[in-house]
Length: 131
Image (tube, rainbow, N blue to C red):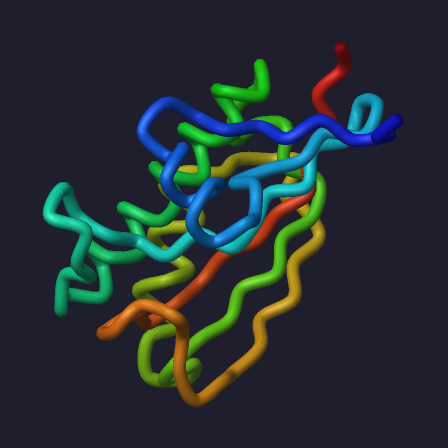
C-alpha cells in the first residue's frame, strides 16, 4: 500500500502517464510539488523572463489548488535557474507578486539547462496543506 497519493490536476494526466511522475505527491499534510517551468498555453516558454516566471508561479498555484491549498501554503521552495544572476531581479519580482509573508524557506541554484527548451527557471516546492 502506497503511503503517498499523487496529485494530478486536470490537463496533466499525460505528464503522469507518459513521463511517469506526478505533478505533486501528498504524504499526510505535506504536499511535494515537482518542478514547474513557466510555459504558455502553447506549451512553450515565453522568451520574456518576467512572463515566464509569472507563469511558473501561476502553474505552481494551480497544482496546489488541485491539492486543496494555495501558494500561501508553501513552506519551502527550490528554484533552478539558467542565467541565475541575469534573471534574479525578475524572478524575485514574480516571487513577491505571487507569495507573501510569512516567506517560505528558499534555495536558488544555477544550472546550465532545464527540461523545456527556453526554460529559464524551474520551481519545486513543499507545502503544508492539512487534510
